[in-house]
Image (cartoon, rainbow, N blue to C red):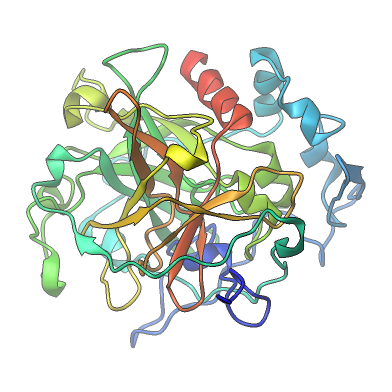
Length: 394
């Protein structure tokens, strides 16, 4: 019998192992080592701010030490969240403000190149394999390079500053329902924009479409910003992630990763007048509630950890995803065989819809310790509501 997917013994990978860090990718020390994840900028379970508390929501016991302010506006149960309207999301966002002023010329080739992954923390959760919601791990699939030019792809890299350094992720340009043909929306992982419980949104958060399009920085070569960011550097103006990630997320793979997604609204630093979609030449739709038995998924991203170097766009054609769940009350994650490593976090998972169009069905969240598979959240009602909110937000 195949090994149980992510057994507690060795196979669980912390959420940050796939990103240059989970939730953040600080600069690594000289000599090629990797730094430990920086502490979050808010209170933690060990260092609780006054007014911190715990409780049970939707049958889930919240970690102790969460500041009361973080829970303001939270529904009485996670099931109630599926019934939220625009006003509810707006109220929640007003209590969890994202502030990301443009700092002209902040991101340069040195800062982009110096953002490195951190070692993952030990896993703390065990998959719910006895509840019939977790399947055996699929066979590993070897990642292959995506052909250049990358300007024909909706993919790119996300860069950000966090306490302790700088990090990076992968991301995708997605269609904006309220602005057809002129989308400025980017889909990535929740841990690429926010560290989770007790923390604050990352700073200097930007999206670089078609990163290293020409290959100028491949093989350790130095390249000017114009080669690394041929379509510009796009700063995040608004960001939304799931309330589950904000309240529960952290440095290890667990039930919070079943809602580990985020959407950013971006603007061009040079204010060219064109939208991101017009600049890139396209955007992909998001396929919510995609039938699992109809999906054949391909994950795309910029893996950074060896044997990769974060400068090349790769893909894994993983086929039909299997299931992974830490909490059987939540939608099981999608899992495909893939050997991509840190840096691929947030990268889009694509599948053909019945009409033949390619759509985004998930994003990379976690993977196995031995880099044999990746898992991403199943995108359903909560994810659709988040997209609708940021699409309509003015």
